[in-house]
Length: 365
Image (cartoon, rainbow, N blue to C red; front, side):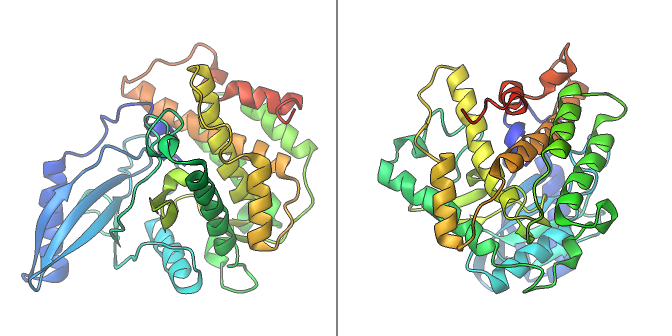
């Protein structure tokens, strides 16, 4: 979900568009021969965990539109310990073949870093609009301007998409490529174990007391085990393309795992609550009637046939995940001079107040 926080900081670590264009021209000639030509290229200024390139190819007299996702270069303080584009392609192809959830096609994965400086994944471009991170969609724009009925359609579409993705389970499909047995035996063990591994890697020897308190809370209030499903991982409306207030594509699979379905549902609910909290700080009206916890649970249960359990635990778990991402994005901002190191290490958590409320048990009041 690293893209969530990138809108708050500049990104001087990006590769130059001309450099990308030269490499992509050479790759196209290598991969497709002389009949294909790069017709257009745009490099959007978004994404913290990776870079995105929009380009057009002219082949056989026709123009085809694609998106390339570039893995981060290893020397730019990456957000995640690994960035496995082959795994992301496998997730997208699995969903494309076995789910009604909409995803882009993934015709090429290029593991050789010589062309663009890192591996990259090429996807078919899907047209649609995205709820913005910068400024957050709760500040203004097309989601704010929509009617209550249109926002309800979005909310239901988001819940339906999760229900569709969660029809893919270890019992129906081979998800062993997403399992993390090295971090624990059960789905909950693996979720927590991976986050401990991620935290130890992300902090580089520093200590963040609020994160460590959150781990302790999660251990103390550990939920019952649940049957795992395919977890999208970064399940939020800002990672979906929308047309006519319906999902057109599910994007960004860098945090995909296998785990309880509440992992995705809680993340979607919490990330909207995070934006709502920012709107309150700036004394803006926000969207208090959109993506509400109870409404999302009802919609998801109705569309999935599942009963949501232990949601509060998974909301705290969502806050933990986002807090660890914040450690890395703050480290990058400090290293590149786009922000100052906070005096209190816990201030790397932009939603510290919400997390403190969770740990105190008052968040759900």
